[in-house]
Length: 210
Image (tube, rainbow, N blue to C red; front, side, top):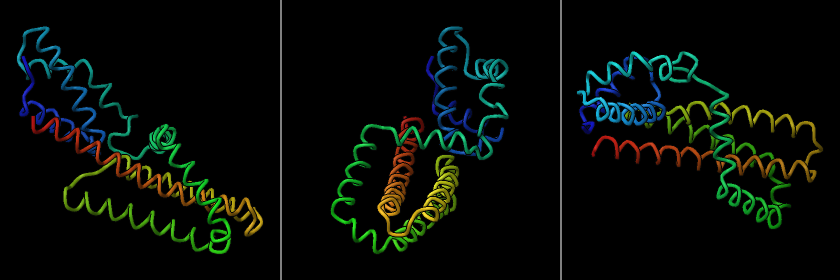
């Protein structure tokens, strides 16, 4: 027996009604539950609704655990998710190349305009993130855990960088490098959000148009 598009929609509606408000997290749960239910349907030779009801009774405490970030912000998971993206080989290579190129070729420029660069980085982060939230939440009625949570994580990062710059000598090598890192992390964050959204819609398309 195969699970149908209507069955998948039923699982998603169930999760929605039980407070799984973030679309990117919910799609992961839908994928996981669909696979498990389909396996049990074939194994037990039962219909979808009977199998799904049994699965919910046996596993509800796992996928609707109140300690999981299905309906609330979770900074630690957001930090872990963003960090996992940062340690990707391709991301590390891009970050290092950006740092080397700008550090070697634009050091004096960054030194002269470090305060402006920092300000522009913050503005870019805020405009991008709030615009992204407004666009998806307002037009598509979608909420992304990765975006809403990691936006707050980035604000914390920038606060730490601000503190570090206050404690360093203005226009020193350390201050310039911190400003450069600050800008690169902003670029990586925007890349991370774009990548997360792209993956979400790809998975969503596979699940709902099959």
